[in-house]
Length: 530
Ligand SMILES: NC(=O)C1=CN([C@@H]2O[C@H](COP(=O)(O)OP(=O)(O)OC[C@H]3O[C@@H](n4cnc5c(N)ncnc54)[C@H](O)[C@@H]3O)[C@@H](O)[C@H]2O)C=CC1
Ligand SMILES: C[N+](C)(C)CC(=O)CC(=O)[O-]
Image: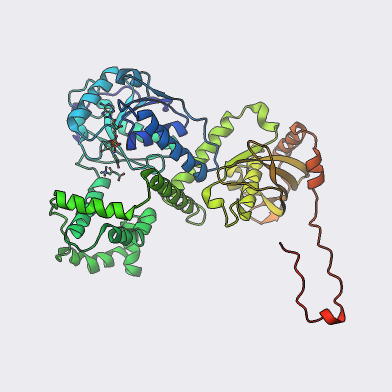
């Protein structure tokens, strides 16, 4: 990137947020961007001349929605509106952010960007998904080059947060910062790359690995399955959470990175690597790799592979969210921050009149929640009930800021009744009510029902104590909180029969077995378990 300010035109101030996006190209990456925008509540206008563009985008979106259903219980905004358009000019009209994701050909991208440039609002940000073309080459000849930059995402765009933001010679510096800011509310991490280079940072690394991998196959050292195993059973697991340098720091033992470099650095000069030597990707090698890849994935369609990948990524992201003793680590910390934004946005959008209304909390039953009996496993009920309790607490002002300020409610007793089965994909909703409360105690009841037929699958009754977190002891809740609880009680409907009969129930013990007769003394005790 040229550092001289004179070559950069001043840019009009960028929009405060993305309310409307345009996606030019709706294939693997464009479709992923469409899903990312829509699920963040942003309206998206698409232009893609492919005859199946609508179907392809719909399939990517379905995958993305399934992944988000499992990824987070945070209140996602209402999905944005999706429209398809006959021309680029129509699609980009009024858009705050335009994302170009057409095939990787410089002539095509330049032509498309010129059309976008001619029709876009002068303050719109224009990102290209290119994996390696230089932004300076893409922006040449445009009337608003200062708004054009590379926004290079990773597949699947709706789950992987990174976007490399690379400005060209004529990109206004503030546009790079604005792009980072505008991506954040979508749960994405824009990383500015200081200087434009071919393939930026991520693909430089991937290409190096890819080149070695092709040599290893060409030289008959391993096949694609062995190569993938080597990655997924070892450093692939490490890289999701610590990258290269933090991982190698640990590998240096207590002496750390300096020792690691001293010990393993010299090996770089050994004849281990073919990194600078490009393999000839001739027909024979392509045939060999394609055949091995077909064998490796026999019976697995691309959509099925995408679903497996997405579920694995969701699991990894959730594990990372719990990392560093619950503070979140890497992409998991980003997910936690994204959820906090969603919570605050939902709280800000909740009408004031709703403050005293009864609370309800909905979730979709995820694949990892199903047990060997084919229905939702036991501990997930407790998770849903716990989340429903959190939902009530946030509604009365006991949110993360309140907890960080030193007080909270702790659950001290729970009673869970299983009344029906929840199956994969069911949406279930916990409706909550306050049964009683005083200065320190809050007595909640949640009824968990299936959407559709409304069948109640579980109830939960919980006693919570207001606690001073420093001493770990019960302490009176402040008046403001007690007033909000009182407002909840006033707003909730009168107790129905189910609540009256379920609340306060104790587990009824089975009738004790009759005392053994003399001839039964050695028989095993009978069991009442089915
Ligand atoms: N596939 C990947 O893993 C990644 C790709 N990228 C980049 O994303 C861009 C798109 O790549 P993919 O989505 O993989 O390709 P793709 O082939 O899946 O999608 C390209 C889409 O552009 C559409 N298209 C073709 N001509 C068009 C035109 N004149 N106007 C509008 N749309 C047009 C096609 O119909 C197709 O739907 C490329 O620049 C690529 O380098 C970036 C990150 C990862
Ligand atoms: C193969 N690729 C160069 C298009 C890959 C990328 O650009 C990023 C990714 O998702 O791996």
